[in-house]
Length: 127
Image: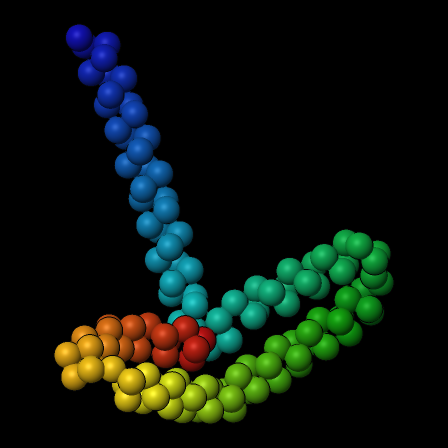
């Protein structure tokens, strides 16, 4: 009986460790996804590292490519901020069109649905 208790305790500790690790990773990525530019900094670093590895770049080439990728990332973030209001307006128009087709009871439930999901969607679109 003691052996089975010990095995169960080890398995439980292992599962708690996996759960804590998964929650920690999720919290980290959730936090990063709400920062301006989201993961674009990571993406450009990964692209730069891959290019350096695959193309055997010189230090001068690495510097130039890093600058190019950084400028492109800055431009992409600016473009995203420029387009975001149009995306949110489209979302509002879509919801208004859906609302028209619903019965009053469905509309009430749709507004609850919309309220629950809008903030999450806005955060996702806002990056």
